[in-house]
Amino acid sequence: MEIPDFRKKEVRDRYRNDDWMAKHLDPKKIFPDDQDTSITCDFASCCKELIPFVLLVRSALDGIKVYDAVKKENRIVIIEKVKEVRTKLSEIQSAYKRARKIADAYPQSQGGEALLEKLELGEEEKIMDTVSLLAELDDFLINA
Image (tube, rainbow, N blue to C red):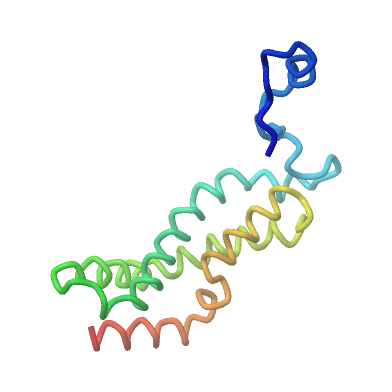
């Protein structure tokens, strides 16, 4: 990486308009101009609901993996997260379905890519398989 010597005018001039900031995204352009707003108008509220659920799912599923390594007095936090996922599963699945609808409509858009990333992080496939997930969660809770 170059370290510019700003004492030299030609170097200063070369960097004069470089603000070192990432390009700002226009929130009106996260979907194509010909978007179906009946689908994309749900993006903001979908994200508002989806992101906390993804965090909950991650903390519960990751917690299960590290449960035996956690201090005994801290294990209750993992158990509570797993119970919360179990209790809120239909809400979580509903949020995932909303996100999937938008992402499938515009997978190459910035909005679609962001939702696909969140769904992957939130283990969509596992969450949408109700029977298997509930069996896994119940097995953990019984043996915790």
